[in-house]
Length: 202
Image (cartoon, rainbow, N blue to C red):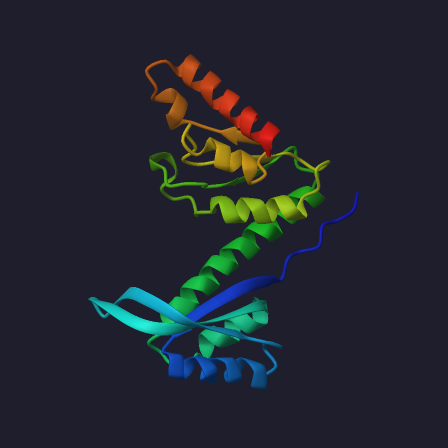
């Protein structure tokens, strides 16, 4: 059994005033945290800052970065007004890293299946960390097809089950969409058919 390699790279996007974008790019390149930073202009941002809704014409700096880069950018961002955005992106990346690490550990332990979720918001999983389709796709990339099946869970219904199938799930675990349906048997059949149809077309 070949052990999947853990993923250590994520994409960081940070918006800031056009005049500060070059400074952020230089900050990253000078410290050898990035070989290249793409600065894109013409970005219109609407966001909350100190309980006010702000609107700014900004630039966006994009880079591919590893764990160390993201951590250092969060700790030493040039402008504290924009640090929360970087911190949010770092949190999303860290969550994906945790999912990846757990998936690899499950694969190495020869688990019968690997659950990934919660896919979507759901009342039955209020204390479950969010995963989403991006994380499911990332886990699919590191777990080989002959490994344990990936079971997506959390907030799955007939409106989004096709997205889950196309993101790489081998199966789904559902509560509300079946248990709360007027005809649970029919609901389960419709979900299964929609899932299999999407898998066949992906």
